[in-house]
Length: 374
Image (cartoon, rainbow, N blue to C red):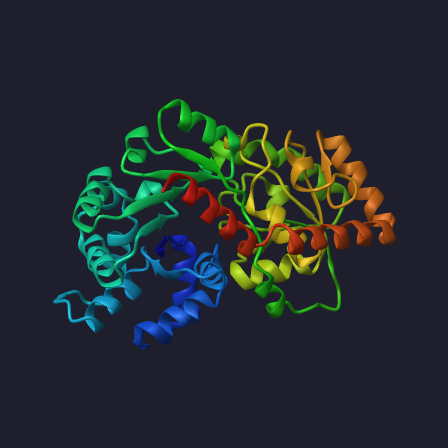
């Protein structure tokens, strides 16, 4: 089996990347991609690398990086008359909602050529909302391939799922919903990549309480009053993509900036306690990346209670949880005062993640699921 992993990156991350590494634009495709992947953003190359480790062919495409995609096209002798220095136009091609709905511009045409070049058996798409169903149906007919998708966020219209042969989700409620709507779906948890540990740097002074995440109004605004209580009592530090979306004067004083990829892992690594919460889409299920990122780097995680949380980590032994604000405040206070117990839980959580919740294990699970269907 041969996989082409179609990944998409956050627009703010890409803009920050090119501000930090303007020389990337003049690199070859291979050098450019290597530098981008080395930032360890999102799932980085964790899927492809671990599929290769267990014996399968796999390649990554950063679909919505227009600089990288156009560079690939030019190096493969496709006739493209686009000024690669025109950032606004390039980012419009990759991120404009209308462009995504139509799925017709040069970025989508390049992907067709990449599929023809790599000849995969499976496309694995991380962002379902990026692709018009008709576009995917045409790809399937032209290249005779299977399309897998992954989702654990707010849904696009149900029509968007129709071209997929199988959907993977880390949320059981999404799997149940899709199956009820006659869309084949399976449960596949998220994971941690141990390579991250090679990029950690310890600070002389640890952050006391850390929260890293977005403040997207529809999904996460409910968490602001609770964070404000924490900020009034403890030394809370917040990293988030945008200070402007934090609708709180108290929390804006806690804002430390953005933290992507390696920087995010280092913030977590250098925190005594990391606070986590899930968006409303998760309902009563634990699933998000922070569960594995925080425990993976060896910090103590306190997350919101979910019905399946104890299936992923042992509560009170490998992580801690809270069901209301008072419980969270009390547990923060307790574990700041009881260092040995905090370290014990952090170490147990890391051991569980590095043993069970690895991308190598997840890719083995993915292959088992694929064999079930195909």
